[in-house]
Length: 114
Image (cartoon, rainbow, N blue to C red; front, side, top):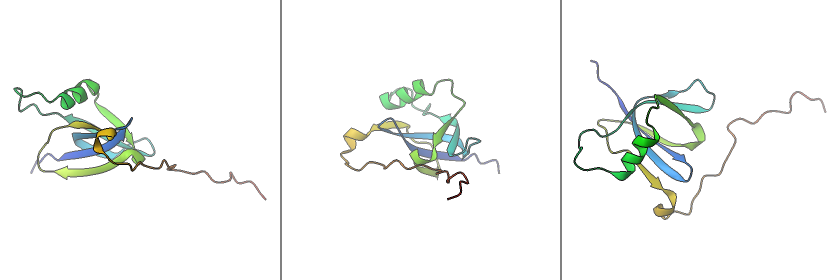
């Protein structure tokens, strides 16, 4: 029963949508962040090289785990098998909808009396 889970994590980063596959996804030790560890890249097919996946490999080379702000996470799925990791630029998607930045935590008035 040592079934290893695979997660697909889709998040926004610097005007691009990142889709990565990982072994571990959890609420990180940093408040407001999702922790992603054990990145998986398609080692199955060495004949065909996907430039998007290669750029992700080089970007995350040497990274054991990374943290994504909760408001940047679009979706986290548990999947049966690993797919192709990729980066999709927002400009090519054709959509005109953008996320509205909202604070995750808004501090109160600090206990001041009025």
